[in-house]
Structures are given as C-alpha cells and as structure tokens.
Length: 403
Image (tube, rainbow, N blue to C red; front, side, top):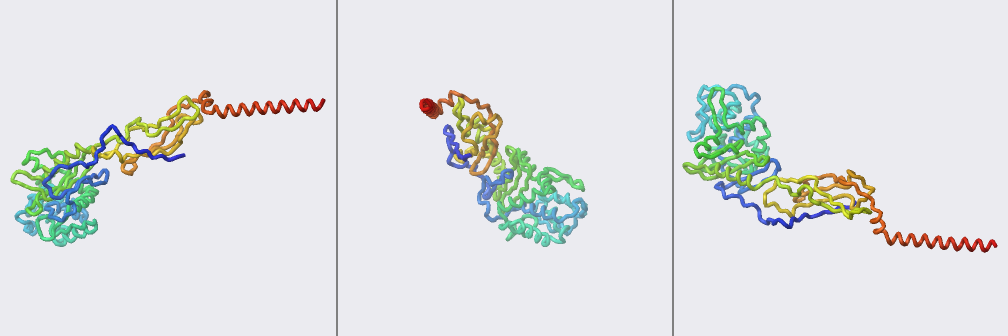
C-alpha cells in the first residue's frame, strides 16, 4: 500500500489570483455570513463600534422571550408604559387599555419596530426599563459580545449605547436557534389580539422604493441620525442560508441604502457563488499498473461529480486528490473488489471520501506473462536443460561403472 498525493492542475482553465470584488456599498460597516458552511464571506469594518438603531430590538426580543414563561399570557397596556416612548420613536400603535399577549408584543417589537411594544415588554417582565436593560447587558456578556453595551430597549441614540456588525451577527446567530424568535423574525405580517395588524418594515420599503424585497426572508431594520440606515437580514442563495448585517448606510428623502445595499449584495452572491464540480465524474484521478494482462494500466475515476459551494474565482491549485490503495493489480483481483480509497480536498479541507471498487474483470494473458518474464523463463529453461544434461551424464557414468 502506498499513499500518493496528486495536485490536480487544470491547465486549460485560467487560474484566478484575485478575490472577487464585491460591489461598492453605502453601508460603512458590514458582514455577510454563510450559515450553511459556517464562514464569513465578506466584511467591512465589522468590528468597529457604532450606534445600531433598532437592531437593538433583536436583543430586546430574545431577552423577553427567555424571561417569559407563557407567551400567551395577557398584558394590559398602561399610560406608564406609553409615557416612556419618545416622540421620535417608531411605534406599533398600541393604546392605553389595550389587552394583548406577550406574543403580540414580540411581533410588534420586531415587525414594525414598535418602541411602545419593547417598553411594554420591559416593564411587564422586569418592572422597569432599567432592570430589563441590565438583563440585556448580562446576555451580551454571556454571548461574548465585547463591543456591545445597551442603554435602552429601543435603539434610539444615547451615549454608551453601541455594538458592531460582528456582534449583531453573533447575536442573531444565537437568536435564530430559538424557534419562537425565528418565526417572528421571518414573518412579514401579523394581527394582534386587539385586531391591530402590524407589518414588517421591509414591506414599507418595498412600497415606498418600488423594490422587490421577496428574497429577504427575515429582517430587522433601523434608523437614527447617528446610526444611519441599518439592517440585519436572512436570505438563501443556491440552498445556502446567509446572514447579513449592514450599518451606517445613507438615507435620503426617497432612498434607504440599507435596502439597496442588501439587494445588491444578494444579487452579487447569487451571480458569483455556486455549487461547482471541482472534480467531474469519470475524471481520471490515479492510474495504476496491471500485471500479466493485455492492458498495462488501469484508470481510477471519480464515481460522480465532487461538488463544493465556492466563489466562481476559486483557486484551482487548492484542489488535491489523495489515493491510498494498490499500486498494481492482476487477475487475482476480482471485479467489484475494493482496491483502495480516494479523498478529495479543497484548501486542505476534506470534501469527500470514497472506496474504489475494481470496475472490470482482469484477464490473465499468457503472451504478456512470457514477454514480461522472457529472461527469467529462458534462464529457467536453460537451467532445466543443464540439469537434465548433468543428470544424464551421471546416469551414463554409473551404468559404465557397473559394467
């Protein structure tokens, strides 16, 4: 058994030496993460500390979920709750005396980004906004969000209220493991117990900017003067699930560049990331010798396409194939017998491993055997002849001696 590593160099195809150039975006801070492959595919100032506007409500919502025993428990909206909502905050439209459930408040917090809902959640679950904010900051520490600190539950600009694109991504990864949160995050419209209908802010952007936002499966948007336009988004591309966080984008009277950037980046990933056959079916990955047959060699071939999700400018030099098995076969080896294994690597990561089965019957060929061993056969015959001659002479001599 012998291990051979073969570098597959595709000479007929150009090898790219430069990374894909992502489109220019308005967002000053960004990160895109492939959840399926567990890797960052793009980032821009992703660890810079900044205001995050209503992306704060991601933490507000998950903190509330984890502190509520019964999501269908009733909550009465009080004047004390609504009096704490700043005049410039976005609201869901709750009124004093409304009776809703905790579940309603969670939807009202995420979809229309209702500050009235987030404050109601904080007061009803923790007694005060300050107590609830303490829980939010404790959760941030627990999750290792080192660039994150909360001062309020709404995301309105305040000294010391900050995070980063990378921290928001880490938080969202955690939140989406919670099925209640994920269902809310990916909902576009919901009707509360008091018959108030709330809609995702994505729907509003879709109407005001005449954009197709259907590719955005889930989102939380935000805007303040200090934070600019922000968004966290969940989307799919070629069966891969992605998370995107964009912060500090421009906003004009009729354009919100957080959405424009998001759609541009989704299209770029659609166009430039695909499931690519790095080794095609029936490609020869190793040639071994055949002993005493009409054929001298046997080609080991890939049984099927070896596919990997990659950017279109992937480095073909990073493809490696490792064969571990017999270097020589003969008629002693039977069809369908396992003669070795092949491992396919990209960038030193194992993509696929398969057993190699002999695909054909190997026939013994006498002429080939003679041709290969002609010298040994001649020498053997000569030795036999010499032995017979010597044996004959000795026999003759013994007969003469008896006479």
